[in-house]
Image (tube, rainbow over all chains, first blue to last red; front, top):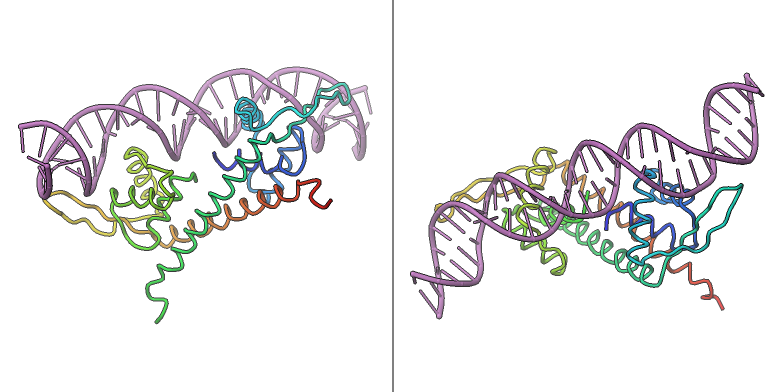
Length: 107
Length: 107
DNA sequence: CAGAGTATGCCAGTCACCGGCATATACCGA
DNA sequence: TCGGTATATGCCGGTGACTGGCATACTCTG
């Protein structure tokens, strides 16, 4: 699972959101670094739906346009928790090694 | 930057290593989850060399076979530090949201 | 002598992501 | 009223990292 997908799940973690709102939320979470293209966004949503990590929360018509709201499933929450733990561990190990490797640090 | 590449840099963070040793180290760091294929490994090393994130530490002949040892460059260390910080932040946010979303948690 | 371990490297294929485009409505300023 | 921006969903071609498999070659063990 890559960063955009992870951010997408994260953006869904606190409350259900629809596609466009997710794109803005992902940008906000990442501090403006990750601007999800719609291709990535809807492609990823399709994939996550098929994987059962998210599901359609509700479909409503706003201003005569469809708005499809997504939410995390239980497996989705679990997957996100696992991923978060994993990358946190990786980050810790990287930081630790960077610190340890300062061979001449003592001098 | 994806996980395999990040793990590769992490495996180089404490001391110079050659290709095969890196593959084993990555597997160790990831707790056996990530088994780097040689295609990924040498492809990534090539890429990282071109990006200037790693460099050839030394080339020695052991048992009449070439052993090329790689090490992180200063930009490589910086990039790893930045990446580690970034994914740590992402992990924190995901964990926080998963916790917050327990709507009935307060009771 | 066969097989496993060490070690480097190439190649075809897959799949997530990128960048752009199309479509459609609402709202705001010129 | 016309154009631009924001909202909102969705498709399509291309890129590039990663996968899985293969080739090569030497050493050590059974």
